[in-house]
Image (cartoon, rainbow, N blue to C red; front, side):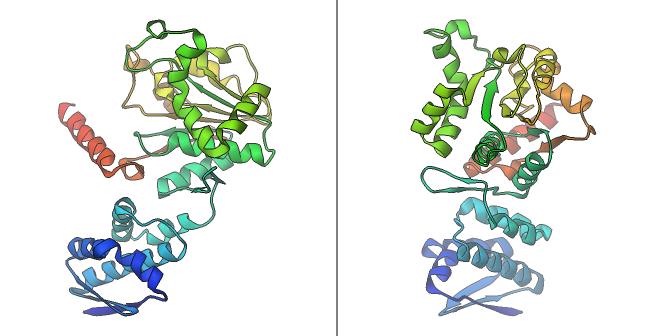
Length: 318
């Protein structure tokens, strides 16, 4: 069987083919087909089913290139999985719109179907738990949604918090005053806000109290109205801390809680407040839980492979 795909411009063709035809070569290996580029045409030949899947993949790349989407090894790998599942149309919808724009001009948007589901949940619910492995964009997308809500005047302030528990370390071991001690724990939240607001705007909003970045212990005894509140690394909360946090919710506020239940640093991982809450709060209207998988990892390909390897080892040990 042979199928021909026409490409409108040389720029689009170059993006689809990849550097030194890298994308085409990967498609040939993935589907065991022959792919030839001649002028404005890409010709695919091979077994019927393989040609159809390779053609859908190339058509997907064409649409991505025409919309200015970056095509790299990672996005191509995800494209393969979506084509094989018959979910290509869902993936291509990810190119539509965006959440916000960073100070460098980059549009922040969901890159996987799992991320799109998460963003939709945040928009439609009052409390959302994003649970999954490292590199899935849980925190970054939550901060992006917080910045968008603030800029759209949906909330008056952004509050970011984390429990000060990391890999067995304690705050007392760190040098400096309390702010110096907690800053390393909050650095990922600072970084995301710097990216979307710029350091100067971030500092100005911090000084005015519009943005607050603080350890979870600082939340006790407060009621948080008109705020977008993010609790990061929630797997390291106790049941009591998690309940305390949830009951800070005030009027016209939204909470996003992120965590990875495979990375619990508490002395007794069975007592994680996040694990507990996922069972207790399931099914309550206005509360949603999004479970990311290794397929939602948007960091280096090796991060996903590492997660898979540990998952296999855990199942074997269990």
